[in-house]
Length: 302
Ligand SMILES: Cc1cc2nc3c(=O)[nH]c(=O)nc-3n(C[C@H](O)[C@H](O)[C@H](O)COP(=O)(O)OP(=O)(O)OC[C@H]3O[C@@H](n4cnc5c(N)ncnc54)[C@H](O)[C@@H]3O)c2cc1C
Image (cartoon, rainbow, N blue to C red):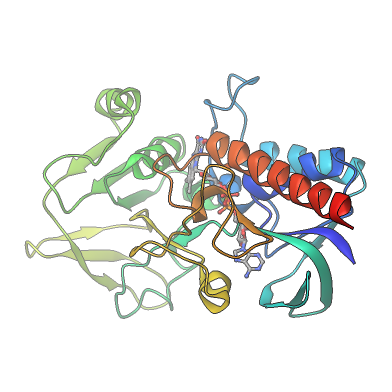
């Protein structure tokens, strides 16, 4: 029986584990992949203590820190959580665990364009992760679909490798970008922005060779990076009957408690406006503190 089981190995989950471990609670954290979304961030320049760090390195430092504190780290998909009398049974694809408290830190995943050959061309020119794949496009021509901050960050990273980067965006101006990124994109001669267009077709046999736009034009591309936002990983929360917004984000109070006693949530999965590593980490700490308080209260009652 663990005191706390955390689902999700991103900044929210790792920080929650850091706090529960320091509260001396028996902690297990289960996540599908190390690091979560932040490990896809090329350059994190807004996490205090470092001017610049790759998301991958930041995440691996977080993981190292909790392992040193004795947290059990399991990389696996949690499939089901059942509520029992005062505890929870958590089933993953390879195991079953019991815990007194659960913290959901399952984050979000990338939205797909939904085009016919999109799935088939993943890894053959289509990518959702500039950090992971940018280096494969040295001297090539690439496109980035999207107009938010993540799209601009990816275009800037890609411009370090590719000869030419097109940003293809369906609206007339970027969506809530960091002003500094807009400046950097504007000053970058290798980046060309094409507004008011949608990618409607992916062309290429073995691999992507061009894309068709809804204005009838065609652009020859070696790679297309899709950066059109995210959808919440909320299947477990939904199955458990946790209250969510219309958009599928978990509703918590300030202590990160959900409507189910003993279940807390933190990070990008919750209904909170700023979806960043630092806010996810802060909410993870809050969830951990609330779990600790509940465990202490129960001990006093017993
Ligand atoms: C390209 C890019 C650049 C970014 N740059 C920055 C930046 O510079 N600065 C910044 O602060 N933020 C940045 N962000 C945002 C930041 O990555 C997120 O806000 C942060 O990762 C959220 O952390 P989280 O722990 O809530 O969720 P995530 O990091 O998404 O982690 C959630 C984890 O839970 C796992 N999971 C989901 N469901 C299950 C399940 N059923 N079982 C097991 N595991 C599960 C997921 O696989 C994932 O590993 C960037 C994001 C992207 C995509």
